[in-house]
Length: 456
Image 1 (cartoon, rainbow, N blue to C red):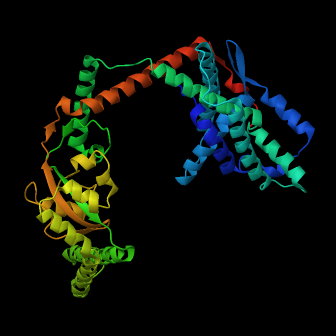
Image 2: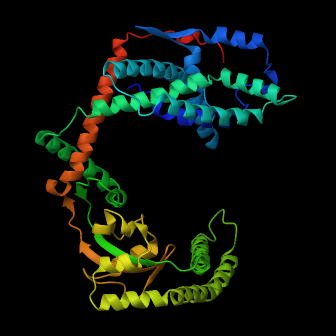
């Protein structure tokens, strides 16, 4: 499916130019002379696509190409990768195709008699602002004896990448045209039939069962997304809510640091004991006595590290005792957990749906949550129980409430109907728009001449 870059173009344009700087074109080679601009204009007039009613030149395709190129180059660089010629060639093709697509959208926009979201003056202001920002950036990069020369060099650099004020105005207009056309076309799909909804439910049910059987903890993440239609639940889950109280940073960090030091010592001890098991075997680097001496030394460290953890935890609990005492008092009086969370809780997740209603889904093997939170949640024996002592995690101090059991297996359709309906309606609208878009482009009978791209 061919996609237009119109929505992203205005935002990516300035970013692209600023990120590429002078890496794409050697600034030292830029000579601000009328002849060079004229030569570029001749080269950029090369026709890369013909369609019923017009052509796409290389200049038309430069802005989407460079926007995509610089963004992708940054990603490749982050991962230590280098773009191949084939990747660059694909970007050129995408840029030309996106311009043809924009022409098709413009024709549909005009045939439907739609209007732009903003006035010509507002669009010009937006374009001028972006253009000025980029020009100022380039004037700080290029060489020149004075501001006039720097401005001329900067404008030539920008032009060489398809960036002019007029072009930017058209990019903004294309973006607003695309938004107007897509909204109009999507609105043509008004409903989802019962048959379609049932088919979507059955498909989602099968997909969820397969996914969560293989990776049960994926369910935890999906279940916290507002509007998500989760149709199958793996075994072993319960729903918990919690009141989070966050102490001062240094108090909480002291707990984390002490626990980290203890865990490191415990891991080191486990490694030494494993090494001891292999002592005396061929290739062993140390004797059993040498390893045992390290084990004894490491064991001697543990009591002090354990005491440091206990001290840090007690200091942390003392720092929030005033708040936790109030929470426990309200719980003892039988006050509603949701009211208590609203009054004292500092976890944004408990203030937003769906978690505000359902709570968090936790099982013994959960990886979504802090291990201390998971252990505290799973230690509760029955619905209605709450932490006898506050639980300290890397996020703060929790009083965890066992809010409900979670029935594993198939989630009845009526439980997910609303979310599933919205998902299916969105899917139908998106598919309808994409299908129409393909038809508009095909109706232009485009013919591509990508080999005519003559200037790198």
